Length: 423
Image (cartoon, rainbow, N blue to C red; front, side, top):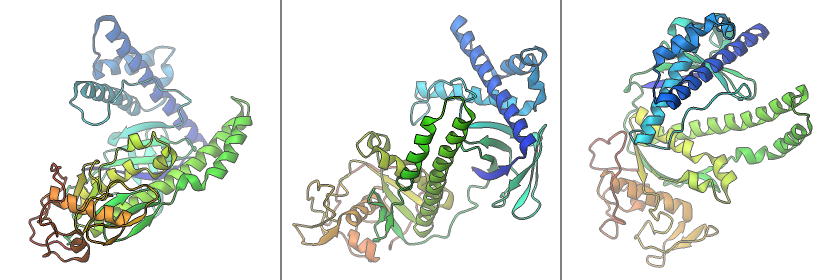
């Protein structure tokens, strides 16, 4: 399994200039390679391979007056740039042909010096590490020198590559790729299972009754952002003051992004560590992000949260279950299975007309998600969801049958055979 470990870099002024030169060279090689591939395809439907592109865009280009400055930087990031271009085309053709699953991938595009994110990748032969103290050390990059790096945590193994990134806020990061064994982080088996219902009033509600507050990162900084964006709009385009104002706005957005990422990682790790199986509802996040609640949905970043849950479940040996997005989790009584119809968003609690049980809307939805997840993945016989929450594994569902038929969804980590499950 390949993982990324990110660390903050602190280059001095000369090193920042060298990195800016490197980013410019990487961008120029990418654009030259893309232009040649487009021209070759347009003229005679010919595809240029990566080796030929390296000869044309790097080796031969260094001997020309227009591109002789490519020799001032290490050739390794330039070669990696063309490899990335080749991968981008491969992904595009795989997406068009249907071999690549997921969202459609577009054609590669030209890069601009005004892009707020700049990056360059070094392979193992072009960088060295010096850890030094537990919190600080050095990263040596070919033709740049040793850059101060903050080692916030240890690397599990020797990295195979490092990508140096400059973000919109002017911060520098080193992103290392390391290989770790697939079974190196398998957690001890536990009996707890949980269903997770995502929302905006509460970020997540679990089937055991836990309600996780929605931090609303962007909403809390809107007033500061509005003030900074008004100041940015008044600055003359192309001026140094406009650049300073833009960086201030970018730093505020970076704070929002960092806080959101930290919350998503901590919450997803906690849920995966405490439960053997996690059931969630498959949300159409892109569709929800086009509605009247678009800002709140985008701020919640449900898609990222679900991807983190799925990835960590696979890494830690847990079972991740996605139920159908059309499953009426908020319309069913988790005790008897009676369907109440679609309640309005203002209805936060309701009483079942069949069994008379009082339910919190979100907790009931989480319980139904867990019950459907258990049924789909054959974790155990269908049981009363209240019994799941209470840890009573021997009591069957009051209806003595399935609440709703569905299609089984394959999981990343198949559960071990067990005769009882408790929450």
